[in-house]
Length: 109
Image 1 (spheres, rainbow, N blue to C red):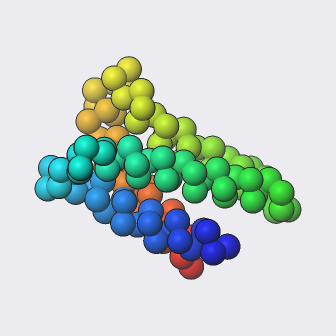
Image 2 (tube, rainbow, N blue to C red):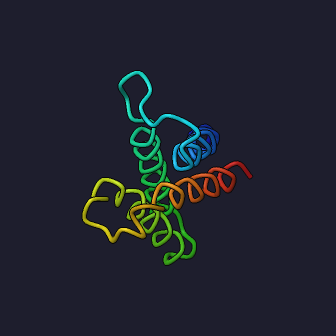
């Protein structure tokens, strides 16, 4: 569970940074690396870890498997943003930032 606490803290920070990138208060590219892409890759890794933990343990299967898969699909959609409707594409970073912050807070409790 230490991995979940560490990535939960990191998700909150990256969620805030991605939100600031969405509102154009912060640059997306820092030292040649896309901050949004790094945050989304960490978010997907976190959700894969949660998915494997939920599969191996008992409990509600629909929630334990469905929620991480939904979050992975939303985060992964950033990589195909050019093929999405314009309204969703314009606000996708904000949606991902909110989900990342909420998931980070959930993992810290």
